Amino acid sequence: MGAVYEAIQEPIERRVAVKILHGRYAQEPEIAQRFFNEARAVNIVDHPGIVQISDYGQLPSGVAYLVMEFLKGDTLGQRLKANGGKLAVPEVVRISRQIAAALAAAHEKGVIHRGFFR
Image (tube, rainbow, N blue to C red; front, side, top):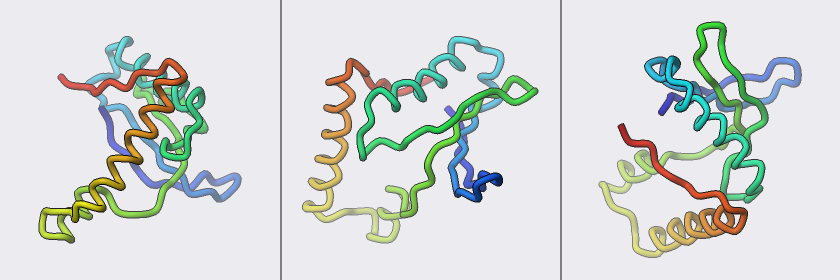
C-alpha cells in the first residue's frame, strides 16, 4: 500500500519510520481510511511484535502517512538472500511463532489483519 522511509523526528532527534500511502490511492477515501485504521488498531493491540505508530496525517497533496517506531534489523528478503534463499527450520518456527503470537493478540482485541490486494 505504500513505501517506508527512515527519517529523523527533529524536535526530539528520534529515528522513525514514515510509511507513505502510494499516491495512486490518495484520491480513494476508503483506502486512506483503512490506512489510518492501521494506526488505531496498533494502539488497541499493544504487542511487542507489532510496530508502534506515534502519529499520522495527510500531506498537502492529500497523500496519507504514518509515523512509526524505527526497528533495526534485516527484512525477511534480506535474510533469505543472505542464506541462499532458505531459512533453517528452527528459525522458520521461531518467526512463525512470533507472527502467530502477534495475530493472536490482535484477535483478542477484536482486530482482524487483512492483506491488501488490488
